[in-house]
Length: 146
Image (tube, rainbow, N blue to C red; front, top):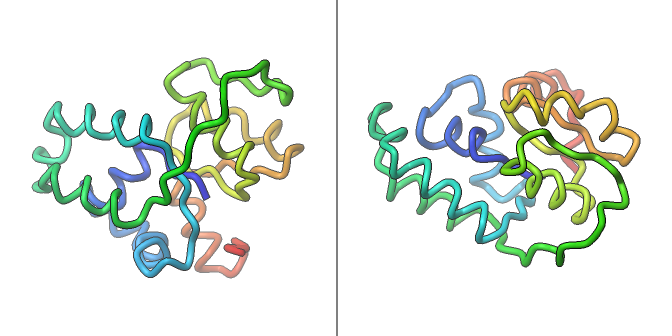
């Protein structure tokens, strides 16, 4: 499962109660969460703008949770995209690429540009969903977390 920056913020900066089931599965290691150093840098940059503090969270604590639970992987070398899924925002493309390259079942995001690719991504075995939508499906037994 690949988690984008907004999802990480939902989990540990905003402490969104609607994603408690997801937070529990990440924190207990039930879900495998691959991520790259560039994704951590993006999170760090967002946190440096005071996003966590505005919600009563400490940036260092959010980064510590990322460090504890993300499985750091090397990104694939740049190559022509064979799957032809392109996100309008180039900052979001690494999340999409990692999800496809790692054969992740899920990419969780609140980003509209990524969510708009859900139907096309399904053809590649990737489900793109909001963290709230994933949590709702998991609670109803519809999200296969395997």
